[in-house]
Length: 335
Ligand SMILES: [Mn+2]
Image 1 (cartoon, protein in one colour):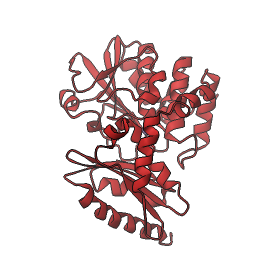
Image 2 (cartoon, helix red, strand yellow):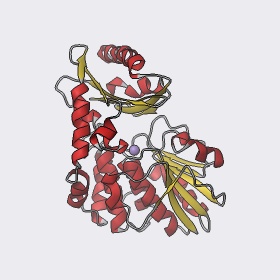
Image 3 (tube, helix red, strand yellow):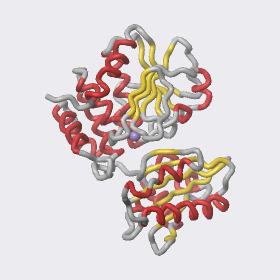
Image 4 (cartoon, helix red, strand yellow):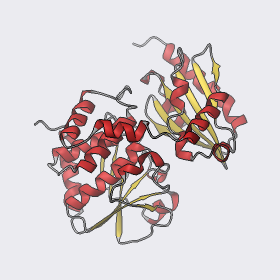
């Protein structure tokens, strides 16, 4: 069978060769999504296969409810308190190393490896494997493992399939390509059960999450003739609805789903700023450039940021201006 990621074979081999006898902590970004969780646990298993003496997974936040059935025998340790200096860090799905956890990054300033698919990644790791064309870190990692001839357990096949399915919104994003399906096919051949994964992800919704969605939907407003749809999560909404922060993942897609909407936004007030999620119908809008204005980043059609020092009241009009400019820019004829 042909290789899925021939251009990264060497680098991945270098990583596998370098972990023999070592202790590795596989880290992912805070408030992890499905791609992050699946890539962390899957890489942990691969590194053990490669001869690592001990592998643990660390994250600032616990595994969200939706992904609990993908934990298996793994454990997620708290990144904030993890301080064993005999470990080295391998980061996955992290556009920016600091998105793991500020204090962990200070304790481990020189990560061993980084595997990611964010276009804005400026990794300073010793081994960096970053492919912005990959639909998910899980797609890249699955391909690397298959290319390297590693054994893909049924558990890892389900995890990696889940990472791809979630980051591509069930194979519907613009980042979904032939190689995405090819990788998914190989995962199914390795034991991934697409219907089981779908039930875990989409048929276990908690009532509290629907309440959170309802609260977001209440705030939605259309701007610029219906081309921008923006809404927010009111302060205290998690307590009110009994939902958790990870439940906000995916809510912004409802705003984007409206007919005629080209850019969608979800804002969430934090203690010292506002978190924003941006989505566009196509990659033309480069919403990552809007996110970068607030120190964030992401993909051309899906990006996020935390605007420090802002409130909902100050950020909302600023974002309106930036979104308007992005819409105008997208209208310009291309050469
Ligand atoms: Mn991802």
